[in-house]
Length: 175
Image (tube, rainbow, N blue to C red; front, side):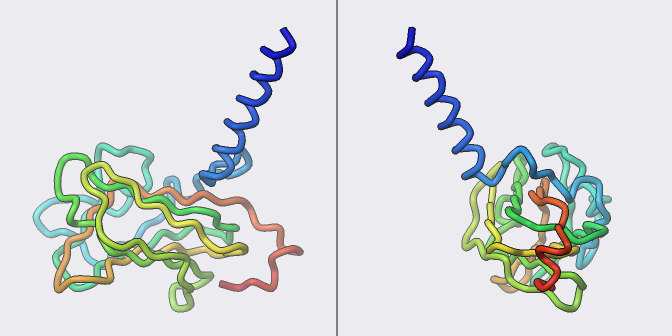
């Protein structure tokens, strides 16, 4: 019976460790959900607004027009301590419309710092994940394709894992 209890405790510790190492601690939340989104351009043949990228659904998507270095920006409405940013690729087609991305975080749209970069593409239904250096504090998150001549950008979903800022602890880090 004791070995069964030890095995259960070890399994729970491993599960907790996996959750923490993936950036999904219980105290983190998707701070981008239902927030205001701006696209660098709007796809002209149909309506795929930026809000589709933060609605919690992988079945729809946001879509830019064809342009050089398209981007999508999320206004988190306040500052958060950002841990991880996940970008999900469409499952129906067009995996090539999300590749070679820079992920930036900032307190203003004019002053943003690099959080991370993902090279290449992941394929249909893929996930691109960027773990931000600690501490990364900001109100705005921007994802931009930085390679190729002209591109469409059509993310299915963007999840920003973060937590409320402790202003005393992180007030000096104005990213």
